[in-house]
Structures are given as C-alpha cells and as structure tokens.
Length: 263
Image (cartoon, rainbow, N blue to C red; front, side, top):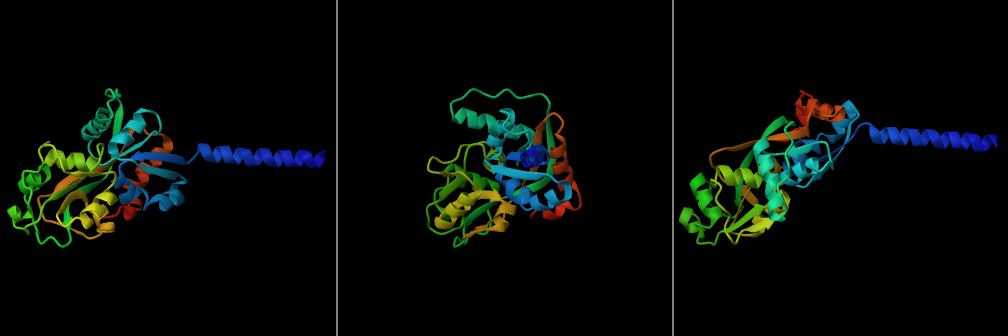
C-alpha cells in the first residue's frame, strides 16, 4: 500500500509538471512565412534559452494567419504587411473561399519587429539585369508577353506568384502593379520556396519574393535591380500581448535578439 502511495504521488508530480509546462512558455504563431524564415525559426532556440518561451510556427501566409488570430486558434499572428494590408489579405482569403468578411476587432495591436525588401526574381540564365516598376507591372499583368520587349531574349514570359493571403503578393501587387490583376496564365503557388522553384525551372519565369528568403536559398534564380519595395515584418495581437508573447516581441527587438534576424 505504501509503495502504491509513492507511485501515485510520483505520477501526480509528473502530471503537475507536464500541465504547468504546457500552460507556461508555449506559444503558437500563425502567418507569414517571411517572418517564419527571417527571424522566428533562426531565433527559436536563443529565444527559449533567454526567456523560457518555446514557440511553434505555422507558416500559412499572412492572410490565413490573421484569420487564425480572429478565429481564436492563436493569440498572435505573423505578418509581412502593415495592419491595413494584413486585414485586406485576410478578407481576400475569405472572398476566394466564398465566405463573408470577417469582423475586425477595434483593439488590434501591431508590433513591428523589422523590415523586409521584396525583390523581383528571374531565371538565372535570363540576361536581363534591371527592370522599372512599369516593366515589372507589364510583365506580371500580361501586357508584355515576351522578354525581348524589355531587352531580353526572344522568350515567352511565365509569371509565377504566391497564393491569396500572401503579403508578398499583396504588397507587390499594390505598390508595383498599382492593384492590377495578374496575367491569366500566372502560376500560383503556396509558398515562397515553391515560387523560387518554379522560376528556377522556367527559362522565362518571373516572380517576386522576400530578399531575406532569397538570400537563404536562391535556387537557379537571380534578382534584377529595381526601385526598392519595402514592407514591415510584425506580430499582431488582439489587445495587449499575453506575457509570453510580449517576451517574444521584447527579445527580437533587443540587441541580442536582432542577431538572429537574417538579412
């Protein structure tokens, strides 16, 4: 009986530590794959070592991450756009799915961590070195269908872009393309990695991705020079951040945390 009592006590202690561990220091973040790759994954272990916060990152895109926050699946969303653009991306996902617009809380808080540059990419064998925003817009909308019209080879243009809800797509489309639609023949992919892969395979491919993501693994693509396309990388909460979320924000804004933000 005494032995059983000791076993029971040990079991109860294990359960207490397990439950406490699950309740404290674990944060799920949903949203931007750029935030995921630029700072959250590279800084995950140093963050845990410094603060005790263990994170799990779901790179589903800015729009879907915002919807996860609104639906209560997470208490913090990752975004690679400003607040207004993030909300538009979320509503865009719902529109594409044939669903009504989401109700947006009045107390959303935007916590900027760093900035990011979006760069146009082409296949590595494409000799074109620079493009204006007008040329990029015309290539992506289908107004220009052959690279020879912008000083390149006699080669059909193949536009590659990301999914609805992607902030990289939304920012590029708003700033560079002046909100014009992508060409009907554009290939739509689900991640930045797949966008780079598609442009790597297509001799006439053109896309637009995070410079930080490109620098990590460019594949068989290269960037072309153009006017800078910049956007914030941030976390969004409804109301004040939970204590563990605040620790994440404070860590990546600190001198130590900024060491793990990839260029």
